[in-house]
Length: 466
Ligand code: G3I
Image (cartoon, protein in one colour):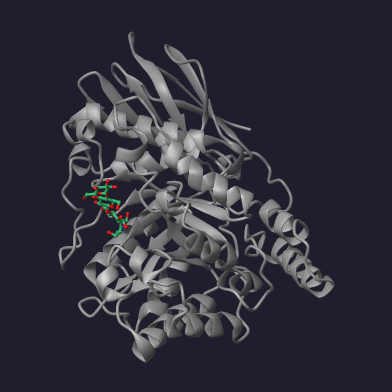
């Protein structure tokens, strides 16, 4: 929002442009509360970012820090885009090359450039089986689990307040027809590693939208798509903090744009999460490439909760698949037919504005009478540590808040808590709701968690409603 207003007022623009930008800002604030900036020096309708902003959406690009000294590259970036994703600079190997030692210089260059130019930032990616530093590749079990939670916590805390959306977990499902999780060192720490990562990210940065991001999840009929859908549905049902699903959407002849793409977008959105197209590139050229890009843009515009599109690079020569010429600008920075088709789609039609993710439990207009609550604990323990997931259930009446008290065995210490505020770290510990999960309608549940050293709690917790 502040990006948008800064951009709307921060540059010498014509009066008409100012009015358009300001009107766009007001609509965005009133209807969607979306954090969308109008692209640098742009007037609505003539650049990807400005046209997307008019539809309450963002249009972003993956950016490499070392290209920020390339004038052609930066010229296109600043003119066309209002969101950036660091292509490699926020990954685990880049940000924590030695355990416990964090380096943010390259990621900061991108974040600072974005903030200076009114662009929002997608964080990519906190927990991923790939591009792990060597020391993490060599860890397993509780040591890896703790290192992962620490990494998520440290990086999301460092960037707290600067990230629009985080890819909290990336590419955790297997390809093919199994619908299974991908085997990885992270997966082998326990099936709950994904939700633990999301809870740690929420605790570290409560303002960022938290996304699950994957590829080959574009075709609604694919087992992998269904598997991710089932995980997100389960997370929403159990109160695991997830706000968005990222569809990478790397398309080529082996994995083409699917005709049911809009169904995939709308089906995920119907679960109560935003959908973001996070790494779009489409191999090819000319009309066929342009048509595919047009289809993707139109599909996003047709789904209210498809809130933005990011292309995975700027010029074809910047792409990880450069030989497939999959992007919107050629190697010299000229606009391709795919660019024009995308811009036309963004400028066409009337589309519903995106909505922001509703809280897990919709706040009632008048406070409900207070009832009672119950709490149960499930433990994932290992030698020397544990993660506890606590489910809080409202009784026959709605509640406005809750406090869960439990006693830890001697020697046990709470080291990290998510979706609750803890009082005490050993012995008698009380966990109270945070802003977004205190109100529960009758019979509704929410979950919070904590990690600790030593042995996890074994006695039954008491829940007190307020
Ligand atoms: O910077 C070094 C350079 O110094 C060295 O000489 C060279 C030798 O190989 O490597 C360079 O690093 C490469 C880096 O890209 C920067 O170009 C890495 O080897 C290479 O592995 C890395 O590839 C990245 C890839 O993720 C790694 O998995 C791509 O740039 C990046 O576009 C790609 O992005 C992924 C998303 O994160 C997740 N989804 C799929 C997407 C495409 O693969």
